[in-house]
Amino acid sequence: MRIAVTGGSGKLGRTVVRTLAQAGNEVVNLDTAGERGPGFVKVDLTDFGQTLDAILGIDDKIDGFDAIVHLAAIPAPGILGDAATFHNNIRVTYNVFQAARRAGIRNVVYASSETVLGLPFDVPPPYIPVDEDYPARPESTYSLVKHLEEQMAIELVRWDPSLKIVALRFSNVMDESDYAEFPSFDADPLLRKWNLWGYIDGRDGAQAVKRALDWDATGFHRFIIAAADTVMSRPNADLVAEVFPGVPVKGDLGLNDTLLSIDKARRVLGYAPAHSWRDSV
Image (cartoon, rainbow, N blue to C red; front, side):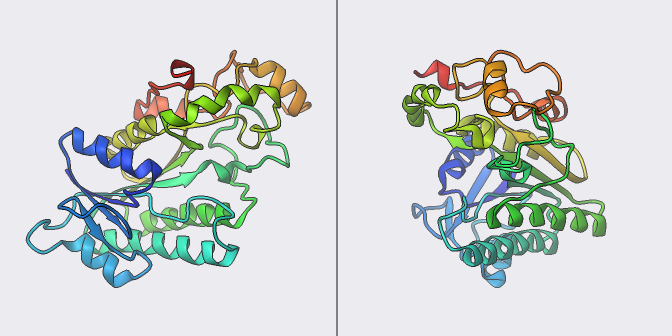
């Protein structure tokens, strides 16, 4: 496929671009910063004209795209002020979704976020492990935008039933170089309780993107994407009893299994995380 990746210069984006290209796809990174070359086009995605122009085609190099992976965003709360985060992220996502529709692209995969589950869980989750079945609970402006993006996607596929938009609710993205810090988390279970001690290796995040692109479907779909394990060595049962007493347990917690359920992604997409911090430390 010919695939446009917005935000391909970011932490997850770099791995996604490399993974998709290694799989034989023609990949172009649309971002505000990146290494000059045939695989990068500088685009201000807050400008609809620039966004549509790039997605429709780029001189004699790319005659449009078959699919879009949308990762570009202010990537977390607290980097910019709330209003700046809101205005940037909702505008960029609208521009990319609408440009895809205008260009006739029917295969869109984008980065939603684990934050819509209720992070940082100052209010405990309704049950553990969490999954996609309960309504979004945004607790920050960043998370609010992610929720609104999902709602926007729901309406767009209602308008156009031939369209597929897949929202991947990524956990905290990690590179292998980040894993040296993980053993220190055991000292205080509150350090990482904010996302139920979850994470996602960037290589497995890229795998999820590829599987979502290859999946033959229409409509809007959401999936939690996390590693198969937690960041902790301590058993899940001890962590949940200490930090979230009284929260109902839904199914088997496992010893160190992820508490951000990836059952749906495994079942529907065939997602199979292959990387763990335990293999690197």
